[in-house]
Image (cartoon, rainbow, N blue to C red):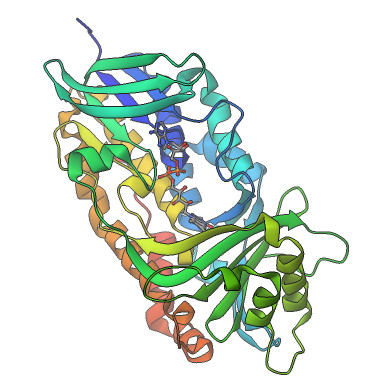
Amino acid sequence: MQSRPRVVVAGSGIAGSLITSGLADRDDIDLICLERVGAHEHMDAGTGLNVGPNALKALAAVMPERAQTIIANSLPWERWTISLTDGRVLMDLPLDTVADNPGIRIRWAELYALLRQPIDSRIRFGAELKQCGRGEDGLFVTYTDRADGSENRIDGIDLLIGGDGRYSQVRDHFFGAEAPNFLGVCLYRVLFPAGDNCPIQDYGQWFNGSNRLLAFRVPGDFVYCAGSFPIGADGIIPDAMKQPASLRLAYMPADGKPSPQAAYLIDAIQRYSDRIHWARLQDGTVRYNGAPGVLAVGDSAHPMVPTLGQGATQAVEDACVVVDEIRWALDNGVGLDGVAARVEARRRERVQFVVDFSREATDTMLAGSDPVQGTLKKLQPAFQTRLTTLYRDVPVPRA
Ligand SMILES: Cc1cc2nc3c(=O)[nH]c(=O)nc-3n(C[C@H](O)[C@H](O)[C@H](O)COP(=O)(O)OP(=O)(O)OC[C@H]3O[C@@H](n4cnc5c(N)ncnc54)[C@H](O)[C@@H]3O)c2cc1C
């Protein structure tokens, strides 16, 4: 019979790695983290992301050393510009007017490596969760060890944390599978070497009608570009739209004279079209809790559209609250069975706000939208106040 509560974290992505980090020094729990990829494989290694100022602010309060390492290995996100591909600037927002600190720009591979490196020995890599459920001995999971093909089982779990991402088995099994809500927009991503005289620096967006390019520099002298265009109600991305010539046409202004930044990006997506990762904008309902001893976090708890760069950002906020709640429960001799409900109570309202705000901010990317009017609305106090709430009102640790 085990004497210490057993905590199993499924997935060492953003949320799972940070939760494992924040609890790694606790010898009063039996902590196990299962990750399906190998130690040196990185999911989505070919892309980049911007993480919001709110993630760094929340992380600095709960795991300051993690925040420092991430900041030291990334570029600051300090400005947000929105223009048309013909060069007309619609918005130029210094983030310090709406946030207490900068966000960051980084490559996925680098972020995953930074998050996993300090807990390398705590993660069971190549361990793919196959089943989870409730048996005679409480909660259990089974997993396949990809190194030797063996099937393994862990019983007697006191807290199972589903950090296994957007297609979470933990969420599907315990809370019920749910069809995603597609927004009718294709979003693709590509990372490429910046090259000489690269005009792309901090976070910018360039519209041609509802077709949008988003780009910024990331460390290592790379540019990350995420392009989008509306698609039909069937959610299918037409093959014709994936062709380099179609992509060029989608962003070329009517007068055929793109700004230097737009021209650079249009050339790059044509040149690197074979490296593109294709996806569709989708979101779903918020759900952390719903079965005793089971907690969903990150994309598993709240699939959202990446329009405001909040998916990974909210996974960081989640991790901060989860670590805070588990530390508090252990320090006060309180069982872990109430952790999921307490996390849900602290997170639901804020995360619902972020999911809704992200969906609404997608207005300028929908078919038939007007990016000029839509961006002017983003300059108004109503939008800026919500942005301030987003970036500043982060969860604070228990006293
Ligand atoms: C096109 C696009 C652009 C985006 N851009 C941004 C951005 O700029 N900024 C931002 O903040 N967010 C962005 N996001 C969102 C971001 O990718 C996610 O919100 C974030 O990665 C969620 O973190 P997570 O910890 O919940 O899950 P993940 O980081 O997805 O981690 C899940 C982990 O679980 C593991 N796993 C899955 N299944 C199993 C299993 N069965 N067994 C064991 N392990 C398993 C996976 O290997 C992975 O390591 C973007 C998303 C998309 C699609």
